Length: 272
Length: 366
Image (cartoon, rainbow over all chains, first blue to last red; front, side, top):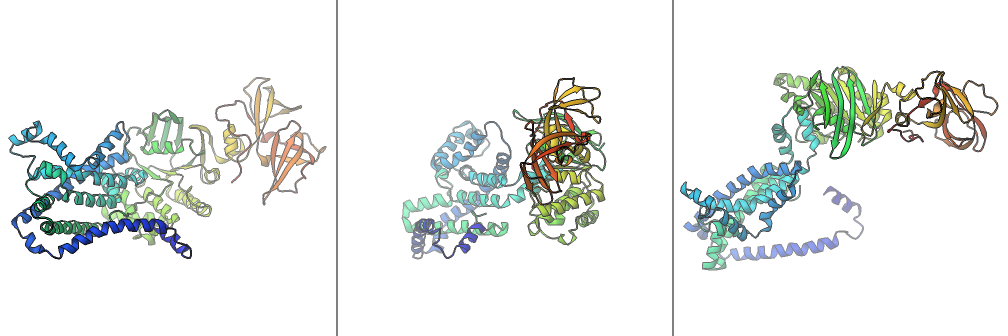
């Protein structure tokens, strides 16, 4: 970033070198902005407060606010250690593990949901075992969390792995030689230094989890989350019916993003 | 003995990085481990610190075998070539980091931190973050951080190699002062022979994973044990000779016979050997003015290079051996016929053409 700034100021009297990429990039931005603005314009004509005060909408918001943070927490608690191992160790079959991490990203979410169903559905060994304990793995909030975690966890793993990979291993070696074991070195050195990347990954994972629709629909169409609610409302009432919940979903994601960024002092999600 | 390496060997896959290296460090000693890049120096440091598990051999610290011990269970301070200060901690927090782990009481911690920041003359940077310091200041904080827990041995792995020359020389003196003041046993790893010779009490020269020679800088420079040491520690002229007799040690160089009283020969008559002499050991005289005490070879001046504080004169002898002579006096002209004088006591004989025979044309002086 600082390099780009430098070269721009040095060569201000020449034709800007970034003209062509900037022009192409602007087209991309316009394509992002137009649907967004169009949707927001439409939102002005509907009564959002009324739409959000229906019991169905309230339940959906509550379910989403309950499940997405839990999914994000699970993805972080298990994904960050995995990311660290992937960044530090080389072992036989590492390629396979890496492919496995990417798998949920390349499998269409709805297919991912189907896969989860074949693994933990009611009539599978796992599903029926859980059912005998009174735990329902599908069509339940647990099901929602399973679907969200499956689809969203790769983001925090991939981003955190890049963050750990960028840390010179010698910083960790210095910590070891100064008397700290591997765990406290991870806690004192690796984790704080990769914090920006990890937080960026958490935000991406949360955004993906709370917006998850395809896999959730397969695993737990009920109870409704905000995305499934939006789908149901759309089928029943068309575009205007979905505006309140859709805006609420957007609002929550933006609020979390801002809060985490402020709290974690990360400039932006992508630019580190 | 503070540190003993016993027949240390390490392989990375099929590649032999360290091959049967043994040496010792005495209390308070500053030993330089010197060698070209890729000769295995860093692997040795990593093995001493415990970041690399050697394929074979033992590492003994203060009479305790630590070969299998974790890095945190060895009392070793380490400074790398690359900066490893923690950017999320202040200078004082960085220095205190190792104290916390070693169980130094919080009230003594500040005292110890200021003691070591004072040692490296950075007391005023107490609350600064590493990014606010200059490269040289960062180096000094790293030294303070490594020393604060008072390790058994301080490992400096090319600590100055990433710095520019002026700063390097200044910090070299700093390190010498710090080492004298603290008396910490230090292993200084470098590829820079000047740096090593200026700093160390004793040198270990490595080549290709093996120890090629060890001793004081003066001894190694004056009478190198191997051709590699001869060429790595300064410049070297080499020329072939044949053993005429073992007792007294007599060689034949071309048509000349030469008795070298200061060395012993273990190879029998008729064996070919390689002789070495430093460029500053040679002198150029006019033909006919030999006094007979030195080996005198007739030759012709090929080139004369003025390098400012001296001239480098390249001479080709009748047998087409090339010699470089360093002289501060007015040099002869190229093409001039001269006589090259090789004082007997400056000649070193290498009997074996061992594995580490280095380049014989000499390393350019830094």
